[in-house]
Amino acid sequence: MNLVLEAIQARCTCRDFNGRPVEREKLEDIARAGLQAPSAMNLQRWRIIGITDKQLVDEMDAAALAFLVERGDSAVLQRIRERGGRVLYNASALFLVLLDQVGDFSPELDCGIVVENMALAATALGLSSDINAMCSMALQGIGAENLRERLYWPEGFKFAIGLLVGYTDHEGCPHEIDERKLIWV
Image (cartoon, rainbow, N blue to C red):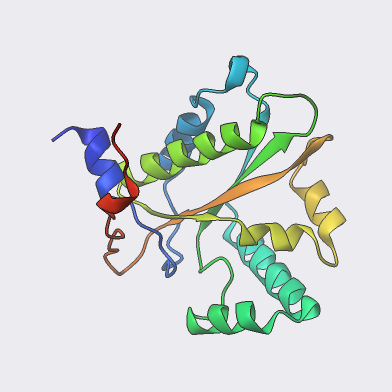
């Protein structure tokens, strides 16, 4: 079978990373896969912040959890508790995909393509991943401005989507496809 199709079929969401560091070369390959994504008019209106400092990832996890507690979202908090009590699931690396807020041509869509390229690259490299929007909560609560400074956040950009990356001790199971969702004309 085609290697790309194999990666697509094998990719699944991981919510139980073991915290083991990911090799720098693999993280660079994942980042390059994101940078190689197509974009409308080739404007490439994104930036990618790669976070390889596990302590910083854990700090962001705690900030996101504190934001949820502050917000009082009991349903989301309960779901997180059922999944081990961590918003970022003990991932050892995190990529933030940011989008330029100025201009046309659907930069949100382009950021989706970026993160999918990266998730498939992670799978092809034997890593687990989670396309994650909850990491944005770390960028909204107390200390968010300081965190953005530490991340060298570019002016004029906002959070689009995150990608958690790492190793797991459990084999994931991709979701079942539902052929009824496909319409042929």
